[in-house]
Structure formats: C-alpha cells, structure tokens
Image (cartoon, rainbow, N blue to C red; front, side, top):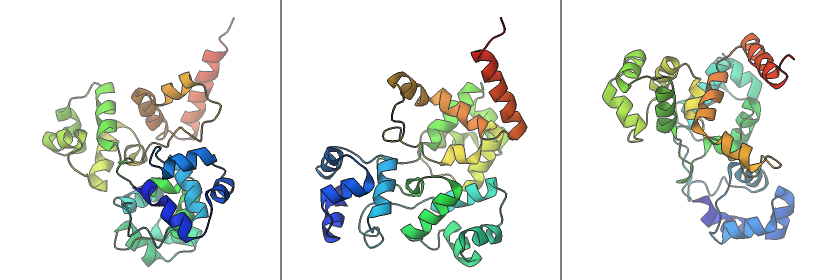
Length: 252
C-alpha cells in the first residue's frame, strides 16, 4: 500500500511533513496519521501527493497496480467518440504510444497519467489501484440488475454471455474484459465508465456537504441513477433538470 511508503518517498526527496502539508493543502495531522498507518489516503489526497511528489521511481517497488488502466483509457476515449489519432493530438502523444497504453504493453509515467486525467477531467487515482481501492464492478452490476428487475439469466442473454460469468462477476471472482463490460453496460442501459471507474472518495472533496447528503451519495441506488444519467444526451439531461426544478417548485 502507498501509505506504508509515503514517508520513505518524502524523506528521499528531502521534503518535511510540514512542507508537504502546505504544498498539498492537506492537514498536517492527517498526513501524520497516514504515515503512521492510522489512516488511508483518499483519492483526492492521493492526487495532491502525485502532483507534489515524484513517484515514478517508486511505482515498481510498491504495491500500486495499473491493471485495467488501458481499458479505462479506451473506455473514456470511446465515450468521447475519439480515435487514437484524435486523442493523441489533444494530448500531444503519439498514436503508437497511446495504443501501447490501451493494450497495456507499456505503463505510462505519472506525468502522462496526469495529462490524460486532466483531459478527461478525472483524478489520476482513477488509474491506480491499491488493495483498498479495487473496482467494485461486480457490485455495480448486481445492484443495477436487481433495480431493473432482471435475473442473471436475463442479463446474460442481453449481454450475450453465460449466466455463470455474470454470477462470477457479481461475486468479484473474475476480472472482465472491456468488451464484456461494454456488452453488460449496454444491456443494463448504463455507461461503460460507470461500471469500470472507481467511486471517488467523498472525504476531502465534499467539504460542507451534510452527513445526510454524504450518506445518500454513497447509496448504491443513487450511484446507479447517476450511472444512468451518464448515458443521456444534452436534451435528455435538460428534461431531467426541468423535472427536478418542477419538484422543487411545484405549481400552486
């Protein structure tokens, strides 16, 4: 886990905990607890650290996995309807290099991941995994399927996969291919990215939100609803917003 190596990386680069706290705009007490193994890093805190510390030399030595990174980049690119060539022009990266990233034949540097994450407006931590930040794809599939009143067999038929595979996916026993996830997402009527991207940590990025609302945002049914919204076009989203306004201001 990254938390166990933070102090080593920081001291190797001759940065005090106080300096890191100021540069990352993270509480000193929080960082101390992280280094002491009492707290885990939130996705947002990890992003701040990636911006202010050089992790490239250490990534191969600590247990940060980039498994599935290529699938995520490809899914986000395809949802924007971009070719490899078009994305390469936006990022000033070669088509060959991007192709190797998507095929997971090459692991990009943190700087490259930051460039990709800024373009897609997602945190860098989306592309990095620790043991405590694994994708909950199976849970999302199960929750969405049950909310739609579908059996595993019905979902399997719609996605053209076996019911046994759906059961294994929901139990978190297998790592699905991107093509499989795309078919399942289509059958469920949600975006591919909803199923494969990790949930962003609420802590540290939702300051000011009431505990009640924070709890609501972690509700799996609410997350499923957000996943459905990701598939709507501009006009459909306008209809949803108009409906919300109508609920907030009912006619007298």
